[in-house]
Image 1: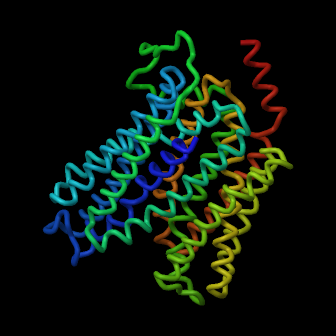
Image 2: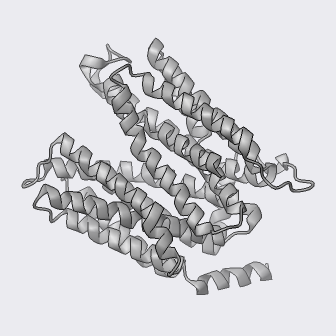
Image 3: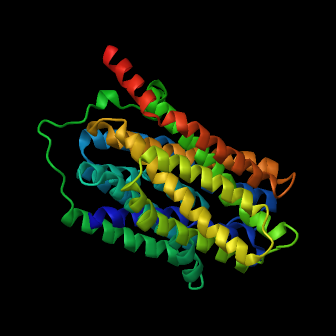
Length: 408
């Protein structure tokens, strides 16, 4: 179990460590590593493209790897994902040292394509058969820790060299792989083999088609997508709002503290609050409450008058969004059979990537019209997700979907 949690942590760190480095590598004139003679708009475009290729590859491949883990087994797919993350980090470090931008793009493609480690590891935890909600929440605790540690590692080690954070990620991934090889074993399933005829280059499209055809899953994934669009809009643009709004005008250091406190909220919720609440309340109730409270917290952001109020809101926002997140994931996991856990958890990762991609486009367009608009949009969408979840997660709908499946 430790090996699975460590792999989730390393996967999350590897996904986020490159983001703070893109500015000095491609934007800031004093530290440019790539395209030193190119115009700023081109460098900005390339910076965004480096993020986009990772997200797009993850969006497509996460459900593919999840389905493959259902057929082939969790362990080989986890080892494949870990090896891909290792290679991606290694190539990224070399690319930065040698100033090879095509190699950096290749590293991002490989890293995104094998970013299915987290959903596959979550499926392996579900297979263990103990408290599913608690294990999924703990898995998201390690994912949240990686989300917080990635930028910290990048900032701390970039004083040595811009490639140092990637080299550390390579080492951590290697340790996770060795531990996985040594300690993780899954129950053998006699006669299990991969049906390669059912997996094609269109597998990613098929996964979304299958999800759209399942009424209970479709509704929950739709709510989850709406939640991710809302949260992505808020998370990306709240710092711009806090720095630009009159009355606050927080400094970069203060905004960094705001984001760190939000990360602490993630960890508190996934490690303590959500598992404790899950012992007393149903997953649908927690999802609705978490989404609704998070929407209210976003509205509070528009009414702040002091930095300390902002820090309190950051903590509440981090806690409430991570009351909803594992609750929705658990609901989705409960909607499918044991042999499809890899697929549905892969769809969760893919849907999250899609949501963040949509939020970047929509909120980026609105951001030019006013700093508060993306935050207002996020609050409205999160409230909409809470309302939709009252129906999408209902037992009545699930029963209807089950009856239909039996008739079919």
